Length: 172
Image 1 (tube, rainbow, N blue to C red):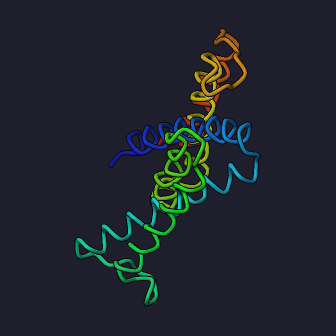
Image 2: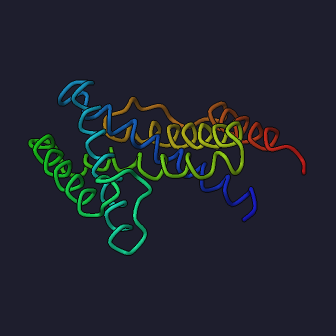
């Protein structure tokens, strides 16, 4: 697959990371920063364990030492962390569970794509997506973020980062 497609995937992952940051901020206001991080990590672990369990039950066991490579164990971890996540979210909107799940595609992409396209290009594309997504979220004040309208200077900042991604990729 061409670098352009992988770069587009990473930029879009950066946008989801901007959403994760807004969600963490909203949870911070409701519970505190450590609690927001804890809820996010529970969601990430539940999502990854569920992905590994499903993959294992479909016949492709995780390359983890026993007993962690057994799909029943990863399924149990997914169930346990999912249950803890449900308890931790009590009193918060259920949609906040997405906070940790947004990290799952990022972690999978980082481990798969960074070696393929290079760490510098991966990070440049990710940061460009984060900034672009953050500018849009700020424009609308999503999840209680500070409202900052999109203006030409902010658009030029995002364009400069995207130009940087092209330069980091180089001409090959």
